[in-house]
Length: 107
Image (tube, rainbow, N blue to C red):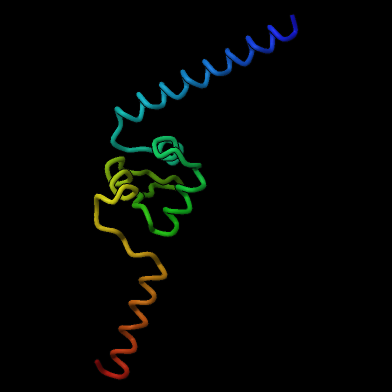
């Protein structure tokens, strides 16, 4: 009897998870602007990954107050290469260093 209850609990949790995933998919499909958790769900990654990529300027985000908003099309395009890549901070610094060198020593 104990095993049957465990199996039922596992099945119930699986169904709850599937309903949650379907609900999230429907919500996301109807929105143009997403929050961090929604973007993470859409792309199948952890929210921390989205925050890190946004901090590294690998994906575009918009900030209003303390929360980030993401345009769904821009996020999908940036992850799957359908838009112009935004330079990282390291690349911007490297370009600035090259420009300072040019100005100091000429071309």
